Image (cartoon, rainbow, N blue to C red; front, side, top):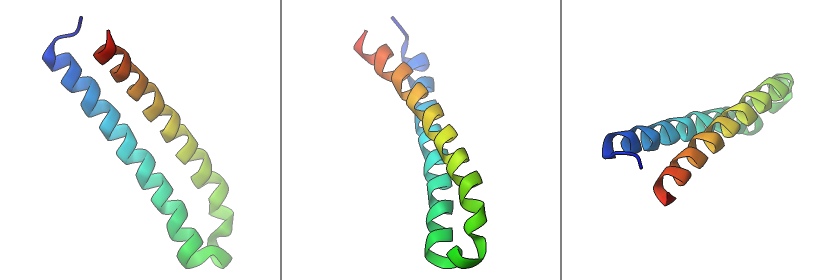
Length: 70
């Protein structure tokens, strides 16, 4: 079983990765809302980075979930 500090570290990591994924999603939103017709070509890269960030969050969250249910 993990100690309190280890659980806090997992929680902090999951929150950080969720924030990063949200920031990438926000960049997509900004392009769609403000500059779609001039910057649409950025969407592929932004989407790829958003997917990677979401996968990193999902992995971190799964580690936290596993640690807190064990």
